[in-house]
Length: 409
Image (cartoon, rainbow, N blue to C red; front, side, top):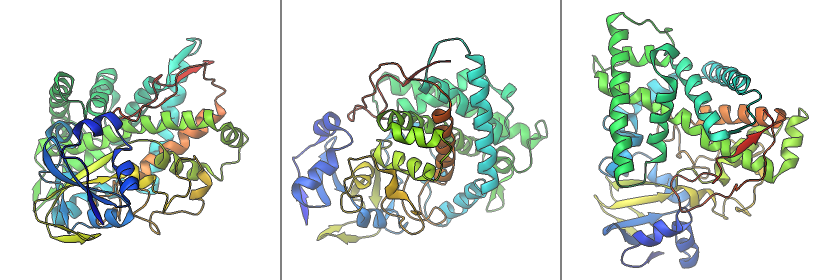
């Protein structure tokens, strides 16, 4: 059954944050709610059934759905996320070709090498914030994995620019405008890389993402340099965003030290379930918008072409119908789990089949890097001094207040 919540919910949504949609669904006993956000009529959805329809590629589109302050930082025009139908499948296939097991092993090895390099440089420095450390490590590893030499860019500057794309994504005003301005410069840099590869001035490894994107054709034509640049950023930026999950994993290891002790002792049977529970339990991206492209019906509510829809990612990951005791951190719930068998419940990075739907093609890289980070944190001997590890759920994107301070370097 569909319910209506107050005329405009903008202030309530900003005040409550991630739990807003799910709390209203729980109170009303419905997974479909209508309201207004920024005075625009919108229907809010939660749950596996809604995720199935949202991501099936037939009923909804991302085009015209994402607010400009989000789209121009996270995706931008012409990116794979903005495409539908055959165009999306073709571009997605190219991305998935970059994410095979061997490529993920190489990415993980580069991450570990850069982690060790960073800790060696920080030796005897006392303390460091994990968010600062992991972002630099991930940027350097991502550049090397993409086939971009570290000498081709100032790593601290690029780390800052990628971080701004994430940190300012849902914050209207001057900070968002500044981040978007900085992104334009990052796109120009990536466009120049593509043009240098095409002109023969740069020769990245043949299987590297930079080489593949520079040579990728659609309808017989090379991607425009700017579109190829946007897609390069769609590799670099999400890899840096894994730093959020690494921070959350560190918080989980502090709150549940039995898992750190287990991994430190060499028992890694639950390393992947731990990573998956981090993705489910902690707040990453709150929700995703869409517009109806083909009519459908859920719980007695008819959706018409052009309707605005928002799917609750966080609330679906905390739906007690699919995840009993959802507010408890329980990695064992993911023993033997696979997205292939259950593609519409753990949707922190999208739902469905990544080859057919809008499920993030980088989900595998997130899990692979998170597993490596959990292993390194568990075995490192680093300690966490007293600090505020609380995670405000009304801040987008959410993160531990302290940034997770590590000591014992």
